[in-house]
Length: 247
Image (cartoon, rainbow, N blue to C red; front, side):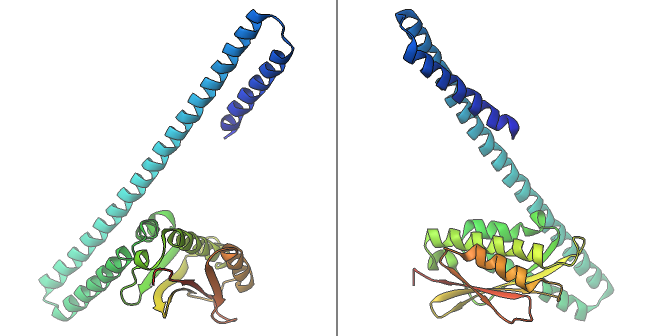
């Protein structure tokens, strides 16, 4: 980070110094030399900026790839566990437990399917890879009916809503635990209410600092198209509302 700011400062200082010297120089030869040097510094700085941007894009892509790979690995691990449990029940002939296990798998598949149909790529990726980037929070997602936010919201509103959801979960992380070693249990619910999308956050437990949480959430939605509501003064629950502009 220090190196990142050092190069622009040095380049800016050199260009400023050469411009000052150019103002006072009288020799044509030195004028040409200084102009060439100035162009060389400018070219070098532009090249540096392009290389930095390319490196940042590469690092971002590698980070997304690592997260996606880890997410797929977790899903594969979950499926292997389910198959082993099913195989064990089949071997033991426990049909009643076999049916309940299949129902549990079907329910999880239904939730994953509903998440993928939300239609906002950034939000879908965040929710599906949540375990990889937020190991201190156990997030349960519930989607009522077929909520396809990508069709209901404009691109700008969808991006804004995603930012608010991510920031609100972080607010629960800071205000919702009595200690950093505690696993936060949080439920995230989506539904449609007339011409609005309603998103509700419910924390399991009473350790949340409700006042701090509400102050943070109000800061998050300030100046945005999203409205925040407190469900109950005694509960660690928050609702977000956004008008569906494409209805």
